[in-house]
Length: 569
Image 1: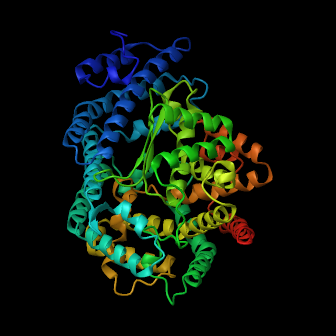
Image 2 (image 1 turned 180 degrees about the vertical axis):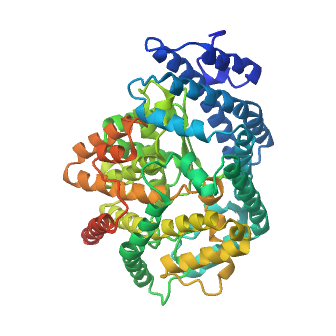
Image 3 (image 1 turned 90 degrees about the vertical axis):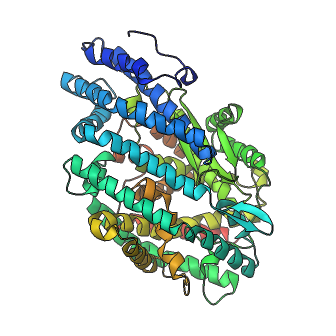
């Protein structure tokens, strides 16, 4: 190397492109052969990890405080002056390795990915990809600024969800309508941003020579093991098998509440049923953190040790506050080989599930850390979500306070029932999101009109989720696509959750027979990182990668049987 690379990202945060470029140039010039290719890959890995962790930390800063203009400017400057400039050199190094015909052990699947990325790369798309990330940042800013005044207190929309879980239906309705009114106030801003997203994505596809953005995106997401037609088949299977089961969930909820029809304020924003009165499992983010730590310890001591590392090294941001970005995520600090978890803790059971879910992602980061090359750490999102959703289910037996968790035995049984019901109800909602995204990019001209998007979303919601009465609430129903971040920021990233849930239920099925053995297989599969194909990763975890009605029927049968068992506790 012409100069030494820093060993920590903190020493790299201020580096400018003229300091970074010589490393790419030297890697590009250096001859590679069977004897030195591993050293060359290690040097490339170190450089990539520095860049990826720098980007991750800059992005995290924009979500911790969406009003911080300095954080936004630093992130955007990185995208324009570092990220964009690194894309061409990255592609040249991939081409160099491919053209060498060398295949180091463990790089078979990563090399397959690289070949696709090299074929897809266009210099003209580099600034567009950076612009796409900036548009996503704007969406986060709009969502992060949404607050309401509730009984004299300013609350984020996320924080208001705790109010929505009150037993008093009139209070839920008032809070729901207040939140909906505030979200609708940004309708024109989201619609305008949507137009910018679509124009940009159409240009990305055209620049790369694809007839549609979906064709381009499928390659960009490295989807080798299934096609859009498989997604359609999966949606039909959900409609056949899961929609009737979800209707039963809604009917049980209607009877619990003693109402004639379920209204949106009897559900949460992602069309899950509530159990009311809602349990209050914790009072503070610290309590959520500490009790979850004990649960992870019960699932597996090593997983518990990973989470303690996150607590000790301040790799968790769980509080809900104004101007904090929406949702929750786990992000990988690539050089440190450590995860960071971001979420909103509001004292509700869903927060427990979110932390268990993001904990599964975090364990994936820890388990794959021994892999020597960053190119091996590109995990298919379909399996990344198996890691997270499996953890929700693997942890569920330890929710009781007797195990260090949150609940009495009766409360824990109820929480588990609610969790399984949410999962059943999720599949139809996922089908709505997935079908909507396919419609958008199959019908680009129509989708450029937000009114057409509104109509399509409403039709899909009524097809897959018929158990909810939206009478008199048409504007809120039809703008449901506004409130799903994946549609705007991560197009086509949602079917992964449905496929992964089917895999996770199979991991959980194995754990009901042999908890220790199932967790061991789960960890072994996580440790593979991105070195195996998607069907191979599922198989390593003890599951089958499937889209069909038979696989869904088996999963639904187990879930409904378990609900029946738990309701006797």
